[in-house]
Image 1: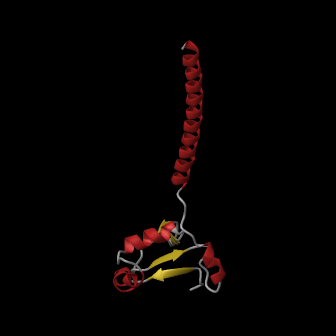
Image 2: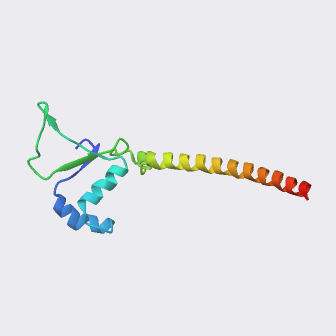
Length: 121
């Protein structure tokens, strides 16, 4: 109504008729999961301090950069990068650096031992 969200008024019909036109599935839960990965959130109506159970099949989603008449903001809607993956990558880089350092030390020790063996001959 105010251009800051979109509604799915009939989830069953939406999944059956709309989703297959744009996705390789007709699963509403998968669609919602994708929306969440791109930063969309379900709008929850709160009335008199408690959650209101919807009287009809109406689900509303919003995103800060999804605003009617502001198409230039759409480029800011991107899939979220997992923090866990970033941490895993950081750990792998640290492990790799440590391993390279250890290889350098082992090579140096090997060269020293080869010199000692040559001296003993």
